[in-house]
Length: 342
Length: 248
Image (cartoon, rainbow over all chains, first blue to last red; front, top):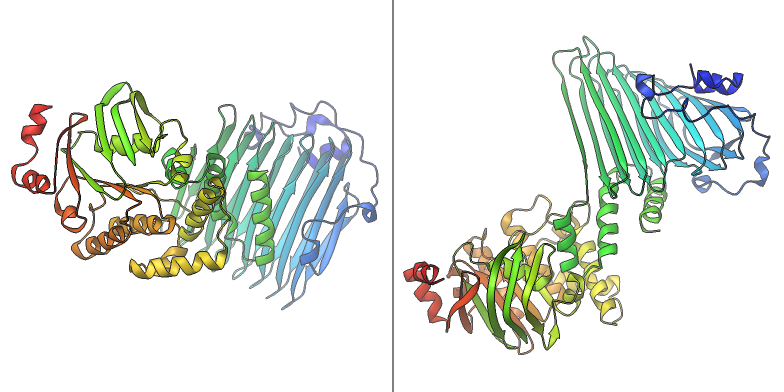
């Protein structure tokens, strides 16, 4: 039962749907009656530039699922790679990406989903971080309102590794961006952040699952989003602290603003703790913009629309500010501002 | 300057202001004193246009212009400033960013050119020094994690930066120790001018030792029940509000 195999076999019955607990809010089975024909080949040379091209040492383009990408970082190497997952047209396609960062290597992975059309796309990523390796992965998902996109990343950390992720999405017809992390403890450090800004009838699902396997691991997670019109956001965050994974420190926050009566946010934060000596917390809020703060800003002379944009941008800004890579952070900030003020 | 006539206002269908009339000429500072629940904060919110405060009768004008017909931000651009009793926290927005946005929005509404970043910073440094505000504090999110006194000082700082024509101070002394009170009062007094009017709303007389009013009004039961010179404040301090509360 997977999206990739449904695309390969063209069997819609293999798509996950609402009977699958983890997919009940992102029902692909009910949405897609027939898996589309394979997408046509796409010449990467004809595509416009990607959002992160200028920041990267290397740009990898996977257009309509063609090819497989491997990103290797040697011991002690430090590099910035832009990974562009491009979808065009109404076909179905799947891509695979593997990332290996060796001991002490550093990688900034600037990943973008760029879609146009009513496609069904799937990307499977496998990331492996050796001891003391560091990865910052920034994902900017700009899918089409008619597209269906699923991205599933599996991340394995070695002790002492640091993995930080910021996923920013504008949603799609249906979209799921999933990250599963095996956390070995051992002072490995994990940050998993997300931002969703949804309008129209768009849907986005940010799902994460982190398993702390041994002692002394930290996880910091902050997801914030804004939904308007008839958009729908799904946040599922699971942190499992296995037996014996003492001194785990895990924090999860999910906060959403709903700016219309017909928009929806479904959130399922889960902490499963089987160890004794841990420090874990989660917070989840869903609400409207603070009317008192809005009045305060207007009393100072800021017109209502601008005050709303200022407060909303600041709300999201807390997540964007956590991006380490400065130039990527500015691109993320610009993307947020454009969506909130546009 | 400010002219309020027979003002009636309700919150959730409960009438709070019941025919309030008040004239504050330019150049004067008027104090509004009154017991809790008299409608003091309601008056400040009605004058600034807060949602949920419904004017059912009467008028309020600034230099002849109908304030009640304007949006809150339009009133601000006309020069009405309210120093809040409980200033709001604005997470994620540095104080300087907030104030600069407000200042330029007001200037734009008045058809004036925007203030450039260097000019703005120069002004901010000068005003912060006058009010003994650490400049680094202005880079932090506005009022987030600030003490009650710091928030009040930040209100006066915003007032100094925006240079409004008509100031409403709602319980500005609450949460201030004597030293902070003096700094805040100095900041307010620095804005006294023949072109400006001020309405100082307070429960206690203490603030009026520092900001000397030209007139004192007693607000009870939703209207002005007595008016007089500064001596009225001292009398209230001695005798309390009881007789006015009864009269209302």
